[in-house]
Length: 192
Length: 192
View (cartoon, rainbow over the protein chains, first blue to last red):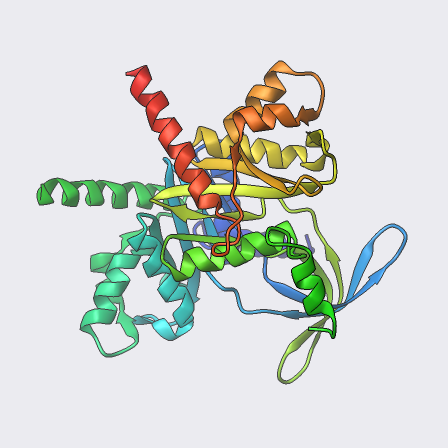
C-alpha cells in the first residue's frame, strides 16, 4: 500500500472504500464460499491467444486479444438453485441504460430465468452509493412495456431489491436473493 | 479444411471423427442451447495478462500466462438444476487415474453435490472408444473406500452412466443426466 493510501482508504467512508463493484462481489463470493453458503465464481475473461511461445517449463502468450464474453460474468449455486448474473456500474444519478448490457447477455439472463434459474443484474449507482439486484423478469417487464433503453431509478427502486453494504460480506447480495426467493414462493402460492 | 483431411475425417469412423472430447462436448452444448434443452457453457481458460498494449482501436496482450482453473471447465442449468462438470480423456484401457484431476477440482465437484447440484466427471477411454458420466457421489464413494488413486474401469462401468455417441448431439450426456436424476428420485423415494 502506498504511503497515504490508508487515509484515503478510510476517508471514502464505510460503504465505498475505493473498491470496484467487481472487487466487492469477488470478496463477497469468497466469504460465501468460506462459510459454505454459496458457490459462486466470476468466469475468467475470454482471451484468444494467437501466438504462444513454448519453453521447457511454461507457455507464454506473446499475442492475445480480449474477446466478447458469450454470457454473464458470474454464476454458481445457492440453496440448490442455479444463480447467474452480471454486475454493472453507472455514474448516472437518475437511470441505468440497458446499452451498458450486450443484447446476448440480456437474452442469456432471460433464457436462464425460463429454465428455472435465478438470474439478475447487480446495478450500482456510484454517485448515489446505492446497489440493487434487478431480477431478469423485471428487466423483461421493462423491455416489454417501454420503448426507451434507459431504466429510471424509481423503476429499479420499486422492482429491484436493495443490496446492503456490510463489513462481511462486503456486498450481501445473497440476502437480496433470499428476498427474491421469498417473493417467488409467495407468487407461486398465490397462483395455486 | 486441408486437402485430404476429409478422408481422414471419415476413416476414423462414426464415434471418433478425430474430434477431441472437448470438441464433442462443445458441439453438444451448442445443440442443447439451440434446441432450448439446457444452457451449458465451457468457461474460458484463465489467462493472466501481464503486458497489454493499448492502441486506438483495441488492446493487444503482448505477455500473458495460462493460469490454473479454480473450478471445473463446464457449468450451467438443465431442468432447473445446477450442472457442473469436468471432462477428461485417458489412453489407459483399464483404469482412470484421479491424478488427472486437481484436488481443488475434486473438492469443488463434491462441494457442488453437497449444495444440491448435479456434478460429475465425463471420462473418455480413447482406446476403447467409450465415454462415461461418473457422478460426484460415486467418486467420493471410491475415494472413501480405496487407498489407490486409480479407478478401475469396472468400477466406472458399474457406478457410472455410459454416454452414447450420436449424430446429434454428438455426445448425449444430457440423456445420461436424465438417468442420474431418475436414480436420484428413486433413491429419495426409498428414503421416505
